[in-house]
Image (cartoon, helix red, strand yellow):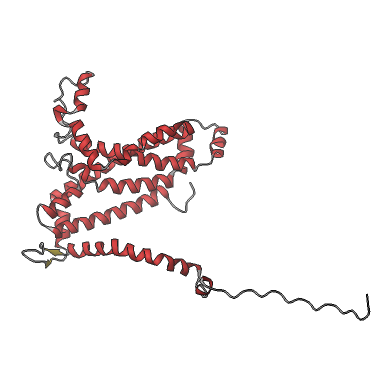
Length: 320
């Protein structure tokens, strides 16, 4: 090396470009704050569409009068007292509970059975899955009208078929929609037929998420059949079952159109659920205060039931 040669000066590190655009906007803003900023428009829209009607409902429940001819008057908690003590409303609440238990229990049992069948068949069940989901595309009003024609007393198709196979002696032996002892079960059939597909879809998705290795380990330990279902499948499906029960329980409890089109709450109010009672109190009896108070209590009960279902069935934070 020449004695006059000198070492080249070290290169300076390349400069990092200054933040521009969105990065400059996020300076000093945490990830949580940035996420809140992005979600704010949707929250405002949701508050306007859901929050304000709820506030209006509570305000209406504290007033009496329709506001048309006799004007509105502040009634305090009088409407709530009426809603809690009225025999018709209490009877409707009991029928709503019975209707919800019938619908949700039947859908859970049938949906779980069909989901297990689809899971067992695997890819071979694709055509059956498509056919089984068709009822979800039918409007509840159409389903109620269809089942009304199927079960209408002595001229319904159901009674005619039961007579031809020898189960009934006469098509008029069973009055599905006019017998007070049978009508609540009869109006629940269209709801079960419509939304068992939803329960099956949710449970089938939950089954797909269970690792097959757990089943193999359970079989090596000697678990078979019902033991495998109780010890492995159901505990791992607990969060999915909780979500399905909450969604379907709330939806079944507020059933309105499918019952209205079949019986309009009859006979003798034997199929009148709480939603129908609120509707008639508001429209037929022109008592929006009591209707609003009943709706508010109904909403509170639904929230409490949903919370209890989450804590008892899902049990977040606890190991299965």
